[in-house]
Length: 112
Image 1 (cartoon, rainbow, N blue to C red):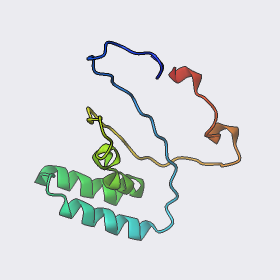
Image 2: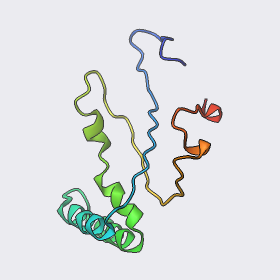
Image 3: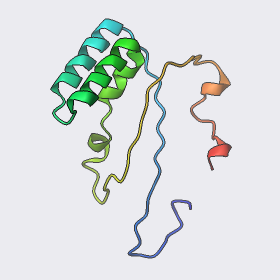
Image 4: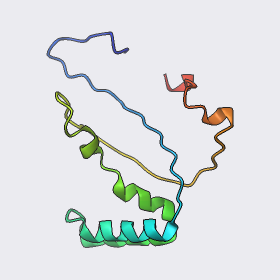
């Protein structure tokens, strides 16, 4: 369905929003410390989830960034929208800004 096609007026419309960000870790220690503080202060994590999060942060600093992603905050103030589901992950990647592979304006036709 394209954004110009409509379904029934009362039917809910779901939209899959894909966002890809490449972030450069410039201070691994500061990121790790902030992520550990974020996990310690997260009132919604139970003890087991908290322990798993701390372990993941200790093993791979790229996982630290995931603790700062908040899809509710991203869509929270958008009128007429209710967040139905959200998943995200962070992982180390190779990045060459001059490579065509990283051209943010290239359309991935396999996703359509």
